[in-house]
Length: 120
Ligand SMILES: [Zn+2]
Image 1 (cartoon, rainbow, N blue to C red):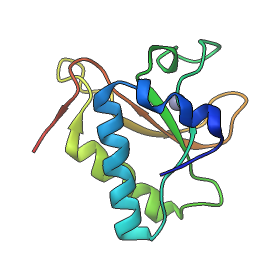
Image 2: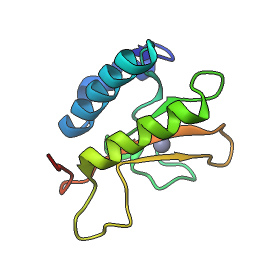
Image 3: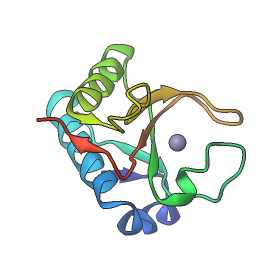
């Protein structure tokens, strides 16, 4: 698993344990299928104009631009969302999304909730 910088890496041990587990699993899948480690660009950050879930240690972002092909991205996101449910009371929310927020480039966002569980 690669990190954008030391600061991003320094927050990793404080992340929600389920989020750490999912990131390790994504890293294994990415290495196995695409021969590259995931590249974590953001872990904890203070609440700004996003949902604030990063400020709760429950989200991380991974680089996609100039890193994965569209097909690789689809595969990675699909596997994680087929493996974990974010909150079974709100099935519209997913553990992994591919999105763009104001002031950033497209990236994979991984998030967990106290109800997040492995499906199989
Ligand atoms: Zn995010």
